Length: 39
Image (cartoon, rainbow, N blue to C red; front, side, top):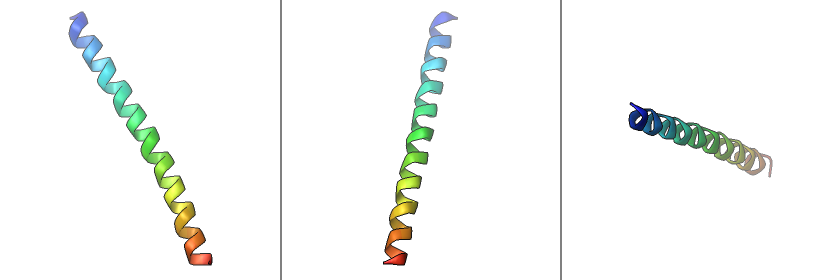
């Protein structure tokens, strides 16, 4: 029971970190695209 819970929690943490990283990358990418369109 404890082992499966630990694995589940670690997978959830990895998923949250990946989502945060994707959001940051999307923000940076949008800024670059906006600059390219303006310039």
